[in-house]
Structure formats: C-alpha cells, structure tokens
Length: 272
Image (cartoon, rainbow, N blue to C red; front, side, top):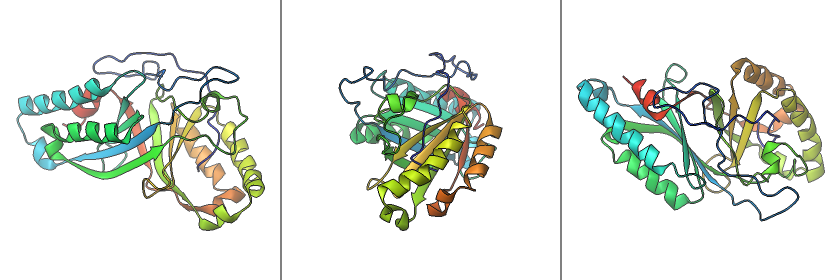
C-alpha cells in the first residue's frame, strides 16, 4: 500500500513528553515540517527520512545495572541533542513483543543525508552502540503524490514535501515495491485504480498514513508508516485493501514492524 491519501484526522495537540512516559495524548504531534501558506507560498523543502531498527546483543543484558544505566543515558543524550525544532526530529518506539529480530526503532526526519549519517554515527559511537546490530534500516524522502495533488487534508496541505509525525501510540512500518507492469500503465489507468484504494483508506480516519519514497536511494521503492491509536482499524484496513484490483500490482510489502511509541529512556528501559 503506497502513494495513497493521508487520512484526515483531528490534529493532535502539540506536547512535550515526560522523561519516562508517553500516552497517546502526550505523544508529540510536532510542528516539524510546518505547512506553507494556504493557496500558495514557497514550496516545502523535501525531507530525508530514516527508519532504523536495532537489536541488542545478549552480552549487554549481563552488564551491571549501573553500567547499563550509563549506556542508556548516553544514547538518549545523543537523541536529545539532535532533536532541533524544524531541523532534525527523532521519534522512538519499542518493538519488544512484536518482532523477534528487532528491539526498538528510531524514526528520524531531517533535510540532509549527511546530517542523518552523522547523527546515526554518533548513536553507534556511544557505549550502547557497541552492543547493537541493525537488522533493518530504510532510507526514504518525502515527495508530493501524483494521485492526490488536489486534496485539502493535512498531508496534502503540506504538498507531501513534509510530514508531521507523532500523536499516536502505535506505528506500523513496512517497505513496499510495485510490480514493473504497474509503471507501464498510463497515468489515467493508475489513477483509476488508485481511486478505490483511496476511497477505502478514507473509510478509516483513525489511521494516518505517511508515505515516503526510496527510488534510487535504497532497495525498496516506498516506505509506508501508519500511525494510529487503534491497531484493530489497521488490521481491517489492510485486509480490505487486499481485495482491491490494485493489489495485483504489489510485488512485496514486508517485513512489517509493529511499534509502540515511547520516550527514549522508556524504550531503552525495555531492553533490560
């Protein structure tokens, strides 16, 4: 499922989280990537997006508690230092209990591949970084959808040059590939097929979709990230989309990562 509408949903209140706990009401719905002026204005600068999934080595769990606490603080400190309003944002999620090959996810958004490289290098240079593997990592970029250019919902109002993450307890992330025959269809035919796809998506307003593009910069073609407080809505949405005509043009849409939004320290405390 890619290149579809972001479902119109009430904008979650801007918030700052406590040091250890995030509830759906507290999770930050940031002003990052703010909208351009209605009816015109300068184009929104496209963002660089990375979803990094980390797995902790068993050896780390056997370290003394005070050493692990120091490692967590240093790792969280890098995340905090790099969170610069309007420039660089990272959201943190636990995947313990939902994936066997990853323990947590760091979703970062910025405007420079070089900055993303530097920030991730600083994370890995921490003491905790020496005990981490990265079984999955997806790099992508924001781009305006060619199918929804006239929509007035939240995401299209930003021209798809910027996404506004946060505000939901859960996120479901996966890479996505279309078949080659899809790209040989006329634009009119692709739009016809997308109409049903979009109509079904809009029937689930409690699920917000963030679509980003990876053509030429990573193995997948898209990365899709669905934010919601209601996992049951997402299950029903995906099942219904399997029955659409356009699903025949899906080449691959896995692995799928079910993630729980947490502050950095809460996420790290889940490791042990």
